[in-house]
Length: 229
Image 1 (cartoon, rainbow, N blue to C red):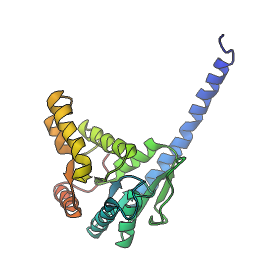
Image 2: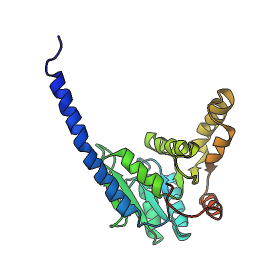
Image 3: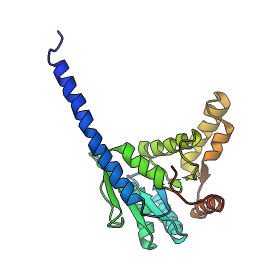
């Protein structure tokens, strides 16, 4: 039997959706105002579950230090694991350390290495991702899970479709990312023609902090540092 309350309940949902627009706008305004003042930064992504004694934690920390020593700040998702390592490296090197934290029922909490005036909290993933893409001069993508993959592929899609200006996307860890690269090349490109050969040039696969810095510096020897859209 049809629930007679359904139309009333549905109208209430639509009303709540309309008011949510103002909360979303508030997150965008706050994010734009704070992020527009941070200067050139590179985002470091990776798993929140990576422990401080893991080689990828230490590598992310070293990458962040090297990036900071060369004039960039560091942006992370603000949480533990690889995010903490990125903020820690920037903090120890005396550089800009930004955290874009997201409210989650598990895993996420601010790490202690974010600059006190550069810690932002978000309820909406899509608003947070806009801040990453708009204000990052490069993405350094360490090993991670679904969230890391989501951020990597969204950035690739935006660049591929010319929705944002091109910027360096660097996958770190060939033993972790090599299988994904091979799948993109053999299955997406060669077997099904779902991407173009040129699309493989939109990202790089490296293993060291020196390789990361070389890609960033070579790119910005040619292009200006500015927001991506």
